[in-house]
Length: 252
Image (cartoon, rainbow, N blue to C red):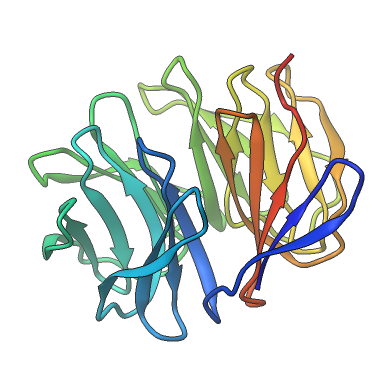
């Protein structure tokens, strides 16, 4: 079931959802795409709540992200990234010889993909042409990724969030906030980062690196996405097959 949570805390049924939601991505028309690892399917959900199967036959889709041409890239573990055209045609974009543990997949303004691998304790960079290189290494357990408007990459790594410059320099950005695990990061138009904690809390981290509790949905928070208008967060509680729309203004 997909529910809408209003600003007053009221819950309204929205849509009967898939069973094992893992990752999300939003296209330019605000259609939401979610991976269901229980059935190895990626679903498309329109703003009006219509759910259809977009693509199928995946192994473990642990990352979804769109490029500027409307192609959807999928980190389909344990060794490949797939490309899905707007028409739904699936092909292998690149194969990565790695230790696996694919977690999150994000894209920069130049169309380069960045993949967090817990198996290699590293972040890979994949160019639009499919060239693979190691962007950052020596991490502990990198999971959630997000870019800011200046091209800095933020990564959740075993209890802290690090900041990685476009040149690959890694520095601590925020630490000391008590979390269980974070598998995804998202950022709003003001530059505030949101980190869904598997303990059930969503953390807000300011551009200055200050972390505060933003929301406590009460469920295992796993994946989160920001919808620019009307300034809404969409939360996937891990493994529960629910999408929770948190209708709270994030912008003045």
